Length: 599
Image (cartoon, rainbow, N blue to C red):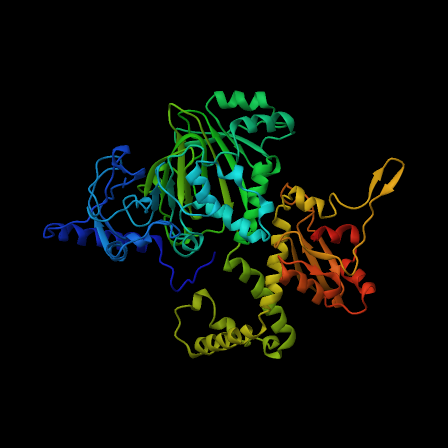
């Protein structure tokens, strides 16, 4: 999610501000007679079944209302707490797990999740105990009933696939609200969620499923599977050629290598459902890698990635270290880094252990490394989003198109350069103070300002959307969706002939199967509809799926897109000529009807 560059604060600026605040806090500690401290406690601090446990913060200033707590909780927050939530609170030093002092003896904190900021205000973390109470939505109901969310989640319960996507994100980042996450954390700073519930991520993936996938599918080293090890400050990749047989992969694992599955969504239906649904929330391709690491091992060198990363710990434990980007150029990078040596990176901003059920988010450009503990293996999945989906990527397409239009339509762009411009322009003349250079610069600025009038924003947005349609996974359709679409309903062979043929009539009600499965785009030759329903679960295995669309069918398609999730009766579509014109919308019924969910 791009942010305004005028208001974005760099990681280094944030860190500098933290250091200044820390110094001010240390001076104030000498004269303060009353400190407000975070409380901590174990089961002995449970009152009426509700944990009052609180972690302790090291020296920094935060706003308690900036921490992750659920506004949907049923508990009443009194006047004192409201006042407390809007105060700047300075927390005293201390190590996690040790005894903490209470924020206020007379303020009930049972409705607030436990949260901490891990040494500075550039990492938001939260810790949630087994006995916390929750509010009414599905994620919170599962939390309260101690039920794995993915066992209760059913896409058929959502008329609007965007709501299903939001619910999945809510599950990943619970209890942080989605809007709060996008405004305050996305692309800004890491988020650590310690849940103390090993089953929280259950049902997504497992080591046993990896073994099954290896045995039942023809996976290849370097294409689907990597076996790697980081030792003596160097990463080694041991991929042989050919198929990744289970016995060969497990042999490498027993020798200390980490196993990375590059495209679990191709083979795991749970991963496919998660990624294909989340695409609709992020508006970008959502991918995933699975990492299985043997005890006491590290598979990868310190590096940063070009994606927003959500690390879901599934089994065992893993030690993670996060580091600031080394400079401004490495903040929100468009491409991943190479491997760093330990001396090339600074001290970590976060040093924590993830356990099963925990989640760690960090923005692209965050340098990281992780290793398993000596007493247990580790299995985690990294869900990724926002790869090369920035303002810069849009402008990379926009500027050449605008320039092409300007040159074609405006003679001023086609006028010749000054005959003598090489005598005063160029690197060797960059320090010259000549009037010609100033005139040249003003002319260039004038042309650049005129260029803004030729920017084809909508056409480029269509191009970006068409690329997104190609990048996407196909929707993981439910049984209900299949029964109401071309996949299962309609003509079929029975006994000695074909039966059950169905036709779309003027009275038929239709809607798109999912909100994000189709997009109308302008083309040089006319209009096309790009769609995802026939994409492969293997990235770009097929060409982009699109169909030409007659111009008279554009209003009808636009009506279908804007009406989602409501059904539309065919006779109400803005088409002239009744049933004869329906064929103009359907174009190739065998393919195009795959967009529709027939009521």
